[in-house]
Image 1 (cartoon, rainbow, N blue to C red):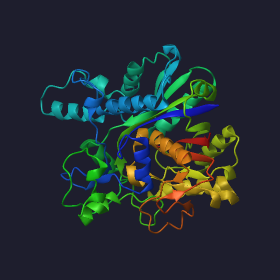
Image 2 (image 1 turned 90 degrees about the vertical axis):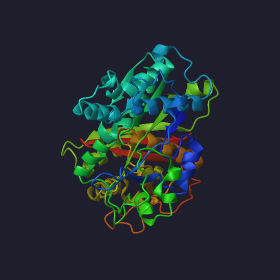
Image 3 (image 1 turned 120 degrees about the horizontal axis):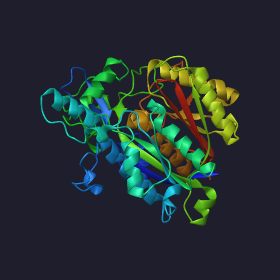
Image 4 (image 1 turned 30 degrees about the vertical axis):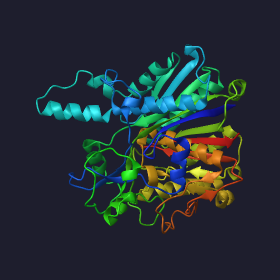
Length: 426
């Protein structure tokens, strides 16, 4: 049995696990307008991050924000797991990290400076390489076992967690630090996503912040500017008037170990990672496929030894795209069948944005915390549910779930890879 004994978050809602979950339960949006100088308005959920808590000035050379966030989240996860969590033979400690786009800030800076004829930083390559976050986490915790990076678009971190659990289960490692990080809120990335016409539309506010980072306290949701509030509410999963997703940044890591090891060292256990399922649509690079998602859902349930009716909550992939939400709804209804009304569903992306390569880890952590606290975060900003998405959505804030025993977290990616994680209350 593989259990979650530690959670570390560096998210748009902060880095304290209970405070982050409480903010989500209240339906607080961390989304705000960014880069008002761009031709089209853009919203994103950014992280208020003080890198000096984790790095000296000398250490920061060649360390992109994506790696900084990863190191901080992994460190918080290890601390949360308690004494002895990584007291193991270094060759028996593994790091499994998801990352979709790598060091976007380093890459954008290199392009900009190079185009202007300036001096490109000599450590640009190691700063933006995809495996840099995992490597930095490994160095911090002397992990000399498998140190692996999974780049599977929006499923990256969920795949990393699934593979880490497999390594613990089969005895390849004693403890795994598993999760993901992403830091891509830079103009070039925003423009590229706008070109795909997948980002949420909103009316820009006059009080937008010119910077690309900040805390949820300065989000449009807390502003008196009605247009700024529109940015905060621009992502509306499963809503009839949804128009797309908003990007987010951050990192989340879990400490995974066997239940026996956790008990032996007296650790607090959040939940069991009971099963996972992986599949590929193999139909289209960007258009999701319900049968492919169904295969991942069924595989995860089968590995966990659970029936659909045993699952009380689904943290949906729910990106708020016109096609994606309907396909996911169809997949859930096909697998759950007559038990679908007993499955409560919400997509928390409405509040923290879409973290791409890290989203599976943040949403897995939220799912685990939902089990731990016996509460369900809301599917925010959904005033009218799309009739094509007839799910039992969690539409109210502060929803208690005293009988919740098992939950799933869905991550469905460009490229057609589907990853489903099943957690069971310990």
